[in-house]
Length: 134
Image 1 (spheres, rainbow, N blue to C red):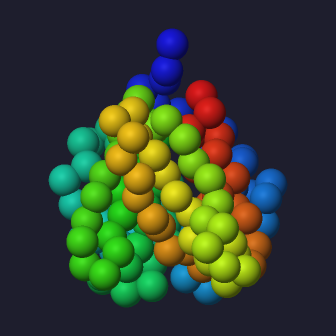
Image 2 (image 1 turned 60 degrees about the vertical axis):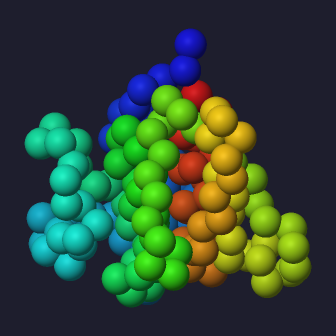
């Protein structure tokens, strides 16, 4: 049976074990939470933002224990953990392989996410693989 949420400490452990933060990819803490007000807006009281990549207000990816929220060129989306079917790298080009990730939901909708290159990319994709495989 597919999970409806992941334990936050497991998400953060997976994130930290696979590269960690980058310039634009951060673990959300009390100290930096105010930088992500728009992305966190509307989350239930018992659900906190855990990790975020934020290029700007129109391009970002937020991971919580229950969902992945993201905006690409100002168009926002949200996929619940229970609706995640698959996650995989984008193989369109060597550049895409290092900065883009594709999520697929249970209805076979595909969503392209842009992420920060480097260790932060490894961290974010590891967490999304983990969430999609549960």
